[in-house]
Amino acid sequence: MKIEHEFTVGRAPDRVWEFFQDIPSVAQCLPGAELQGQADDGSYDGKLSVKLGPMAASFEGKATVTPDPGSKSAVIEGKGVDRSGGSRGQVKVSYQIAPEGTGSKVGIDADVTLSGPVAQFGRTGLINEMSKRLIGEFVQCLEGKLGAETVAEASSIEAGEVRGVSLFFASFWSWFTGLFGRREK
Image 1 (cartoon, one colour):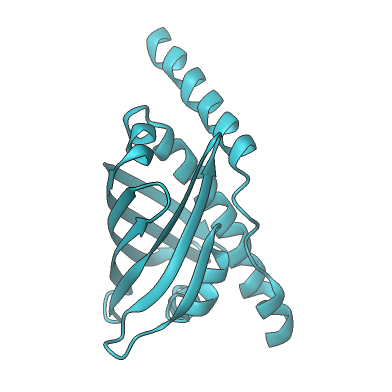
Image 2 (tube, helix red, strand yellow):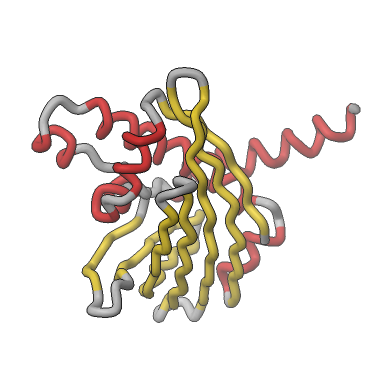
């Protein structure tokens, strides 16, 4: 499944790029993400936990980040397994940072492959709606970290937990009302 998003940040591209190179800080802004370490090969070990209504999934896996400083872009490739639920996930994310007014525009293009029980949510379009909400939380955390006055203040700012039921129903409602909006046109 393809997921594409753009968002703006009220900071210069160089500052946003610098932040994106600090993988532990970026992980703190990803709802449900937990960075567990960096391997000798440069890959990152981590966990991504999500609760979608009655279903909970905790993907453990690895990710690699390949930055291109010249174009202020990067490719992130990751895969993980939810050992308790039997689901698997694989993602390839490309992002690019560009000037936008006095700030920056960040474009994200992701290709997500899910298998197992969690894959049923990808069929309904709910994953796309949930990703929009999660990116909104990511941007709020990012802005907070970039606006912090001290290192200690910045390190204390983290994304909240993924609130499964409220996120699920808010995303479902947005998806559902979007169906009717498309039919009216």
